[in-house]
Image (cartoon, rainbow, N blue to C red; front, side):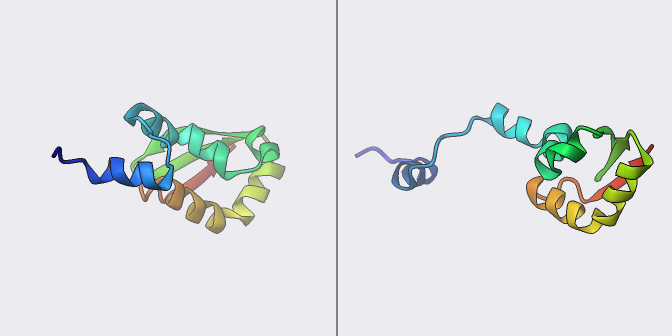
Length: 95
């Protein structure tokens, strides 16, 4: 009898699609995370400009959007923290 890995058993039983490491790495890229965290409206006016340690530095094209992002900064940081599995924990917004 051949021994089967637990992850393959669970994937088969739970009907979970197999994710390759390249796809997983792509989902943790800062620009992908940012696009999945904010709505399309805000994503169209902002992007991840730099990464410094655990901080994403987000460039915003207008002070109006900057203010909107700052007002929801705590919620956005929590969402980024969860989606990045703790890799990114802080946000900094710049014009």
